[in-house]
Image 1 (tube, rainbow, N blue to C red):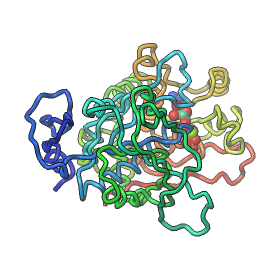
Image 2: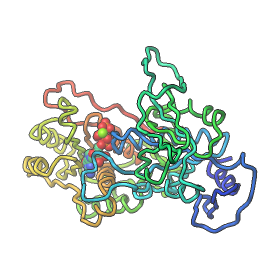
Image 3: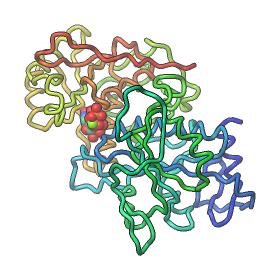
Image 4: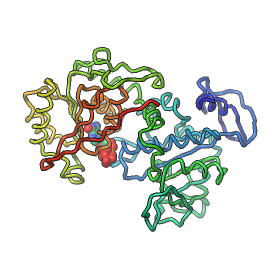
Length: 433
Ligand SMILES: Nc1nc2c(ncn2[C@@H]2O[C@H](COP(=O)(O)OP(=O)(O)OP(=O)(O)O)[C@@H](O)[C@H]2O)c(=O)[nH]1
Ligand SMILES: [Mg+2]
């Protein structure tokens, strides 16, 4: 049975005090009033929650989602599982400190119906409404092997915790922690540390056979690796991660207004249903502009050899514009204002644009939304040049693969001042089968 249909079928199987109802689309919605059926406990869906190392950025977190989503898709071959989307918040890079940037639902950034075409998902807030009490049954805190490893092999073992950011509250009889900033309300009944080396598929037999808990959370989910990086499942999941329509619309409006770029002219029309969209390399033409993602800020210190000076950046961008015979440049960057001004001065012979969000756009969609709009505009440029090993640049590359750009127009990077070799980015090209 197709996973979405299977999910729809299983969602009708209610049990005990769990307030699960079914909407027309076969998507769980606790707000809807509909019939309740009492069916055996064994068939009721189970919920997998996850969290990621607090230090990780937005774009790596999106990659971790894919590892977990593939696990949940695998689990659904044998039993009904629903992936619980961890609210966004507390990210180091989200600098607009005047805004509350916690408890942001996935629907602010992503199109949930698209995600659901790959795997059943539910927002954490919705799960809270369904739960009889805000207590997660079991938490598996993933960690490496203390002794390290010499030869790679897939393995996992229950071990003592090497470190554990959760603390046990004797009065409540629960483990307490961050829980996406819901720590005051939410707790966990049982916590176990698990040393893991290997792929997300390893967890499948464990979750199916070693526990019967209804709600299971894995923390430090980045510890699990992609089952098969870059294969069909990887790309299906990636294609399902469509940005929310509202953010795409803002990016499209900017393209139309300033960059003479529309989907019709650029051959980048999006099929509403990603499962029906299949593009060949080179089909997408892109708007008549070059887009550059210039990661600076902490990369200046973390990767000084890979980040060029502003003068050198301008020189490299001019060379690209000349070669592409284009006069318009869109820059996405996390550089501070003074650096951006200096760069724009150095490029004054060209039309240089950056997306400066109106106040209400920033307040509604926060720093994460602005990052997505920047990525969306970069994804539609005729030619893209990014920053070495930035996951922000990688995600733009994926987006361009989905749209059908020639890889030559995507896998480019600015080179460090002293980097004579300047290795170009690996080409993670899309596959459909
Ligand atoms: N709006 C906007 N934000 C950016 C830009 N570049 C970086 N950022 C911000 O800085 C964050 C970058 O962190 P990550 O998402 O971890 O990506 P990365 O740091 O480039 O890559 P890794 O550290 O290798 O994972 C983004 O999520 C944004 O919040 C940009 O061009 N535009
Ligand atoms: Mg980062």
